[in-house]
Image (tube, rainbow, N blue to C red; front, top):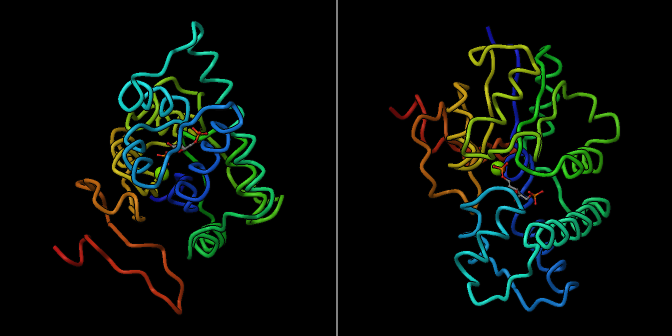
Length: 236
Ligand code: XBP
Ligand code: MG
């Protein structure tokens, strides 16, 4: 019996990456006097690694090997990332990032149907709270029984840990849940935890590997602009 829906945040609830996280990273770099610029194409490649701090480290390892690393690299990255989060939260507070079509409707219908809602994301907890508050109102944070986010698990997606954490706190078996994800990394994570998954792709994830998904959609759609099924039972 279906009891709960578990949502990813970035790319699934909202298109946060290209015009949200990416410019926030760039603002933090500029503020720190660094000449790093993550354009849309480079950012698409960097998304291979989830987690902002992990992404900065990956950038230095693979794309900016000439950078003179400070002795305390962990501290340096943590500080840059804290600045990035500050910029990102400012954008959310200004209402700069809307939910994707169909998200508010689906959440409302799920609540009406008595389903439990949860979140499983690699992003920083405050980012989730601010997104919900700025788009659905203050009380919407309470709609979610579990908000599993960020560093509560050491291994981020594609590791299954964050979904396993959410299941543990929901006290539900994987079979009682359906996950909503937008990326190959996210899908690996949810499937790794045994949770059936609906994928709603976006510009950055369209070409990811979605094998094993219950359904792959180009969005969640609204009555006046329905979504399309890219892969799913109907097409097999
Ligand atoms: C999202 C992420 C996050 C965001 C940035 O992945 O990888 O790192 O890009 O957020 P998913 P932070 O949607 O698979 O959870 O900088 O707060 O990590
Ligand atoms: Mg995502």
